[in-house]
Length: 442
Image (cartoon, rainbow, N blue to C red; front, side, top):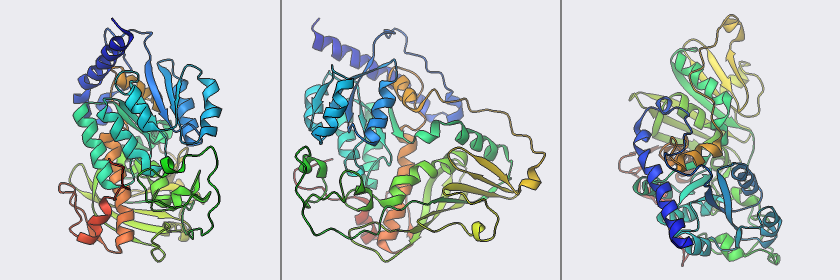
């Protein structure tokens, strides 16, 4: 048997292993468990061959995360900046190197790889992930899953059709604190939750488009970095890190952070979809995302009831801060219940008022620890249980986040029909899908 045939047979086994667990996606999240079992008959010493698209900054974190797994092999590295590629390559001397992710997928997507890790700026998440999945590759993609709602739905559908193992990079989901908060909420520690508030202190936005045109760094392929985004001159304001502040590349602080923080109420309250969303912020700028934002969602739960959820960033905060009811945390999530309140961030949680919970006994641990955010995905590829932040879960979460940006940009309170994928407002619906630059497709 040729090496190419062997690789194709091995990858087909991986695909079938992932397909065999697809039915588990319909089970309750706690019923899935944490069994990282390798598929029967899969060679224990055989590794998942990974292509890494984006190897610096957040990409370096993801590269390090998957490379640390005994079940992963870094088979290819790709980055539009040759200096980043040069810095990463010595750690993986056997990995092939690419500047263009399309060439990587064309050359290695039909047998040389099993999966890809996507750590590009947001505007490239969907094009890279979609092309990879159409090649039959499993995908790990950074948050937010996509730049537009149309892209989100495309990736969800592709993952289902191809029966692929997926995971979005909401790493906090796999840490113990979120599990303990979910247990507290579900146990009724604060009673029925009547409202939720989520806030973040950072700001990506309020910028003015630069007018100078410095030279493109010799190591950077600027046209590839732009990808499907409209043509504009290079500027360090956008690349490598400032892109989040610009509508062409990101969705500001909301797009950057809400998938991490709104993930907690999504999990704890079994949220499904917004039924309405409205937003307030500074006057809309056609180029740059807002420096502050308040987004009000009516969120439908799995049981058919709804709960209000409000997002804040910039200097905006829930009213409970002004009332002196909360500790001065920079970022966090507040659950307001009929018996009290619960505040949490990534690492802490506190029941309030503390005097009312002085003798409180925490509920039993019912959610097992994660085997690790990357390990969940790698285990799913090899026939284990589905990763918790697979696209079926993280896609709807991303969609809700992006609807907040659509509401702000439309300047209207929007109803959301999730079945039809429409707000019912023609102007707002145009914001659900973005036009790609000529030569680029989803």
